[in-house]
Length: 226
Length: 226
DNA sequence: TCCAGTTTATGATATATGTCATATATTTAC
DNA sequence: GTAAATATATGACATATATCATAAACTGGA
Image (cartoon, rainbow over all chains, first blue to last red; front, top):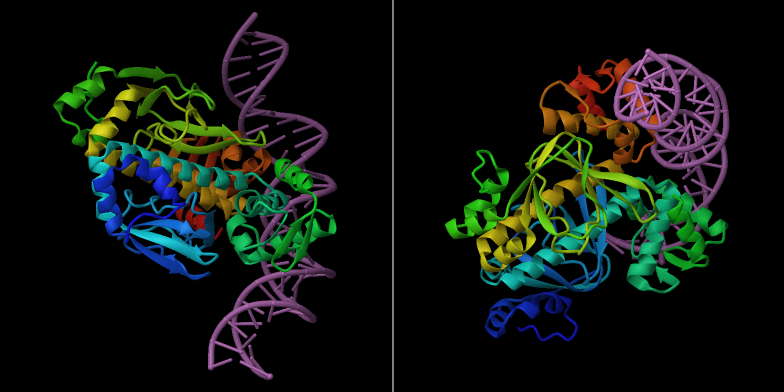
């Protein structure tokens, strides 16, 4: 199996720094795996044995914190998920990863990655900068939530899936109200109530998981003013 | 000026991967600067022109978010602050850095760092792993705050300065109540009220900035159960 | 030393958010 | 296809948190 995929982001990101021989070495050991929706393919605490790249799909990063509390860390698309957050820092994953939609993951030999970092400076630089951008984005989203009210938090989730994932006014939420609660730190009931209130105020239409944004500016205004 | 400091953490972290010649190149261009307490030496939006390491002291990372809200991102000691969060990801700092106590900062030529990454694989690996650990820790602290009540949030700040910075039961808080509010996302009054309540409940003694922990287990229990 | 600004503190009150109870709708397992 | 589990929804109520007002304590500079 090689790396001939047409629209591989990791190729665009990393491979411009890899020459022919290295590319063969890197891709020769690649395994592609289809992950069914709602399947956890990286478990918190597991030993890190490979380097994974999301080729296609949508995933969530989640964890159980030191006090036993379940929380969602972030949502990711191929543009922003490669399993590098922990690879060089810890021996084990400090988070789990679950597919929200059917996803395709490319699995690489971790030793080859480590070897590439040591022998290919351009690759190391690209990896550091990709990793930095990804973790900056996650941290920034997390910080955004801390200072917002329940309205701002729920609005930010709806706007996130609209602006970063689906790009259309109407879309099916890929997560439950409970998961929105785990991401925002709110209770489930509060999440449901806020969604209902947004509906009553004419900001969105709701049919179960289906959301249709009616007043995007209104949502943005709520997000911005808490 | 060279890198002969006795207890340099960056030396311990990075320099084990650098040989004599590289060390000279790296340290030859080093500038050491003393930052007075409460001075901002990195400003959000500034162009990144150098690589900075906190040799001595205590700093806070802070930012103004997209909606104009001021918040504190994290606190750092020499053990965990090197200005690598943004260096390879962005052209400009996405956060400011202010000294909370008189601090010493070592300033390196950023091009030499970038050159080292490209030519010294061991250095690149150490840098990636140091950076990963630092950003994992910051993210983890930020996520911890999201799901906690005002009691848990304030307890976590007090326990942080006790367990990670001063190690003694009594210490002077290096930040104001307002800064605790900016870190936790609470209002100033709520922070003050919670501290007063902790005092009334015999968990701590308070004399202005001075905190003395009386019932550490009680604080931990509050932190854990929200 | 005094003034002005900031910080800490507390009360009164309004609002935001969580908890518990209950009901319906939806999904899953067999 | 049915039972059980889970997800969504809403009301009533309790608790958590913010806001506004005020005052005392502290800080830095003229």
